[in-house]
Length: 180
Image (cartoon, rainbow, N blue to C red; front, side, top):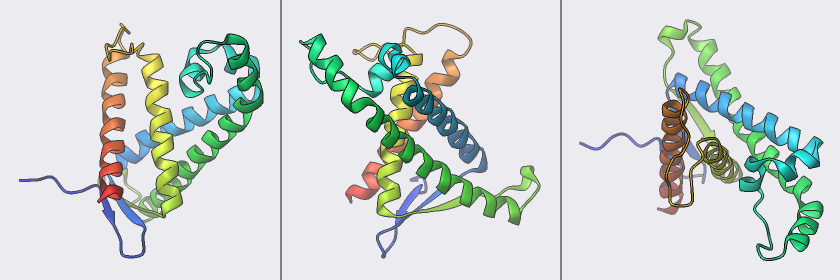
């Protein structure tokens, strides 16, 4: 038996996405944290230049030329971080609208029903980009090497790894849905 599809294309070009309330809460929390981090990098270019997370989000344009890479980053980093923040805001906006409607219908959190989110084509692209940014950020936290090995130890590792894999599954489902 196949599991129900999370993303369903509509005749008007939009997608409907269905999430459990706890998934909406988790996506909202992760995206809010991503947005805060992006805002801190935009406000402090030195942080963006020195923090490994930003290295994953804004890889060097010139790997063999540190000077050219630094110059390119100086001119592009702020704009790229602002666009990443806009994508995260789009995700948050779609989560917040749907969650407000669901909470209004069922105020008791134990009885909350699955949340349906409508995503237009622009929102779908923002979701794809933000899911990528969330996974890149988690990859840095988990210290995932280029060969895919997790090097992080500690109590947070199992949760962060599960979150990383779940976000990857969402991204794959979304790509598969728009590719049909």
